[in-house]
Image 1 (spheres, rainbow, N blue to C red):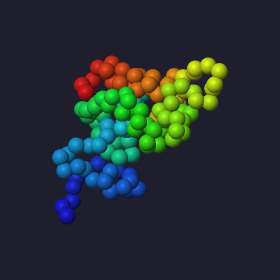
Image 2: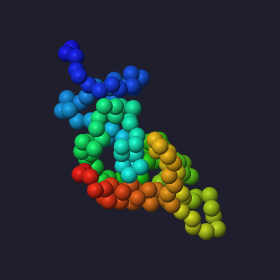
Image 3: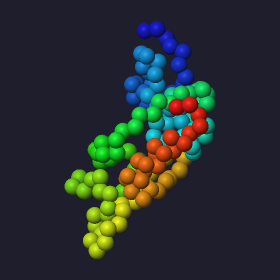
Image 4: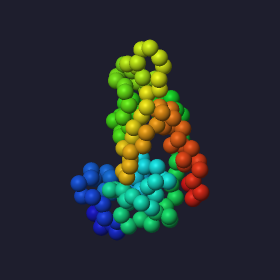
Length: 139
């Protein structure tokens, strides 16, 4: 196999994350796939494909998933979002253990450099894409 000139990546990552795709596309931004650009672009270096990349030269492509499907993904996969839910109560926009009133189920998220809190899962979706919409760099 021909040796490739690729930036250094963490050797503990699975091989699919260490090898570039055939089309040259990277599977995440150099500041991390699930990190907000405002607080992480230029401040965080992703473990895979972050080293050696000039972050201001990187053109991120952002796909918007509808909130209903996105919340279903949050229920199926353990990302770094934490809120009161279980298999029978998901996406759970209101707190399911509070019986005398309706309260939104707040969400805490662990990003690479900080924690963030949102009023609900829908609030998290809104703020995530709103932040991308407000960016002034090309995307």
